[in-house]
Image (cartoon, rainbow, N blue to C red; front, side, top):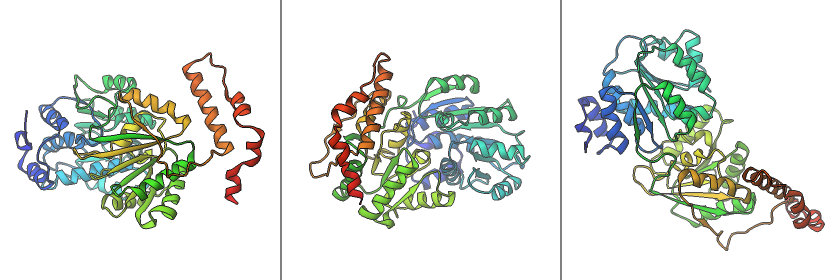
Length: 434
């Protein structure tokens, strides 16, 4: 097996750029994918973020395309999010520094004027979200007749986000004679079926068993009774642990992300050390926040899952899941932000009683048990508000019915037995708000 990039049939321009970027040895997926793609095979790659998969397909494509030619696009790379599209385009700029290859990223959230101008000036490679690509094609801006390479990056995420109709339309309008590459962090049945349609006699490369976390990540769970106790625990971690140098805090919803951000901003780390990104934030705000985090200006970035795959930062010391993701593969994508490039990382998950069911499903997928720790004794464990307790009990009942269809439900019984009239009258958390 090759032990350095010079063992591959890459040209001097690429090798010089690789050396300047500080890469010494290829990662396992690069060792397997680069020669396979240079040989001309379709590739099915099952690899997590942080494994070097972007370089694994970019380097052979840059080698094959070599130099600027004509005005029409020769390679299309589809990505699920704007952040990932920008990240891939930046990687092309890094690796293709000493080539004259032309490239750009196109995505929604910004007006298309600048993107259209870049395409009309002539491009060799386009990185795109599926919706924006199709929009520009239907306007007659994108010409597809010269496309030789088609890459689907994070195909599982694109499928989860509902992009399959657009992807199928794109496949209908590009030349049938082309090389196809599909990369996915997980390999559920729906991806397997699609790969059989999309790829022709592919070489399957799986460097890590699907949906498993990197071995360099120390995973742990804290069981908390409610939302407020989670906030107290989060504040304790940031105040008590100096080793949290750079942390991503993931939240399932925009509302929770905003609440967590306000808590950290006002009470824990201060506005200069934390920002939040989610779908309601403007594109420029999101890009600026990610760049500030990447540049070490921020200690904490709070994000929803839409950003989980679009942040490429090498030195994230901690990923904190404020909640347990209910799209179980997202757990792997979330924690894949730390423990990268063989660096150690810590992934901490907060779990309320109604989230234990989801943790069990995640453990089945990653084929590992995650240790559940007790909350430190000096953290204020608050009583669960009545309304939140009702939601928790109702969800637990629904989960039990999924496990056992004959289960009749204990929610109303618990409501009577465990929530006596006195508790309803007190509602201590409402008093606390006044």
